[in-house]
Image (cartoon, rainbow over all chains, first blue to last red; front, side):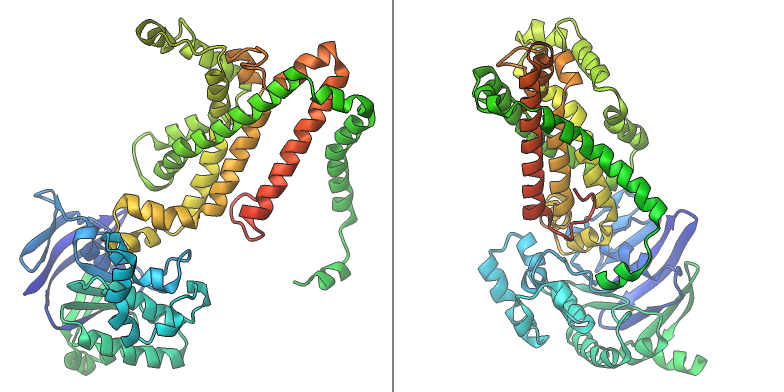
Length: 227
Length: 272
C-alpha cells in the first residue's frame, strides 16, 4: 500500500512540485528551510489545500485530482495532523480537545470518553483532562495534540514541526515519546522538521525540500553518509 | 510595567491637558442636562402613558434588532473574513456604508425601496398586501440598517485575528464546516461577538434619522424614545430633559452590566 503524491500546488509565487511515493510503515521525515514547502505538503495531504495539478492517491483511492475535479473533503480523509505548537482549542478542556474528532462524528460523549481512554492513559494524560490548554506545558500540549489526532484512528499521521518551541530537555523527552507513538502507529507516518537530529532519531527515510522541489530523498543511513 | 513605576514617571502635561479638555467636553453636556432637570416632575413625566409606550417600544425594537443583526451579521462577517470571492471588497464597503451615511439618507433609501411605490415595496403591496412604512417592522428595519455594520466589523475583525489553522485542525478531525463554526470558531470569538451585539444594540437604541424618515413618528407604533424626546423638545422641554436622562441611565446601566458579565477584563477586540 502506498501514498502517492504526484502534484504541484501553487500559492501566489510559490509552487510546490513533488513526485513521491510514501510506503506504509516507513517513517518519513520532511526537511528543509522555512518556506521550502514542508507544511504545504502536509496540508495538501490533509485536504486543507487543493493541488493545482496532478494527483494525490491513498491506498488506491484518489483524494485529490485537479484534472478530474476530484477532491475528498478533509473530514473524509482519515488523516490526523499534529500541528506546530499543538494548536489545541483554547475554549475547551483537554478532554474535550482529545475527543473532538469523536464528537464531530456524532459519537455520544460518554462513549467517546470510553473510546479515548486507552490513548489517554498510554500518553499519561489522565491527570490533565480537566485542565485548560493554556495551563499545559509545551510538552504536555504536544501529547494532547497527539492524542487528539490519533483518537479517530487515522490511516495517515502527519506531524508538523511537533518539537519546535520546546526547550532542549523537554525536546529529548518528547522525542522519545514520539518515537514510541510513531512505532505504535501502523499507517503512514510523515514528520516535518527542520532539525536533522530529530529526523535522524525518528525517521527511516529523509526527504529534503527546497523552494518547493525535492533535493534529497534517501534512507537515514545514506543521509548520515552525506553529512 | 507596574502601577507604582508608572506613577513615578513624569507625565507629559501637554497631552494630559488636551486629554482633560476632551474628557470635559464629554462630561459638560451631562452636567448641563442634570443641572436643568426638573427633578420634582420626574416621577409624573416618566409615568405618562406615551412615555412608557415609547420606552417599551425602544426596548422591544432595539432587542429585536440586536437578535436580527446577530443572525444575519455573523454569517456575513464570516464570509467577509474567511472566503475569497469576487466583489468581496465591494460587499464590505456596502455593508459598512451606513456607518458613514447620514441616517436620514438611509431612511430615504429604505422608503424608496420598501415604500408602497418602492422597488421592492410595490410588489410586497400588490402581491402580499404588505405595507412596511410607518409600522413597527419599519422601525426594526431602520435600526438594523444602521446598527448591523457595528456587529459585522467587530466580528469580522475577531475572525481575521483568529488563526484559521484552528479551523483547519478541526476539519481534519472530521468536523463539518457547520460543526467547526459552532464548536471552534464561535466560542473563540465570543468576547468580540458580545461586544458587537452590544454596540449594535446601543446604536439601535439611539437610532433617530432613519426611523423618523422610514417609519414616521406615530406614538405607540413607531415613536421610540429618541423620537419622543425630539417631539417633546418642541412642546415640553422639561420632559425632553427627563427622557434624555432616562435614556442615558438605561444605556449606561446596560453597558456596564454587560461589560462586567460577558466582556471581562481581558476581552479582545473592541472594548467598551
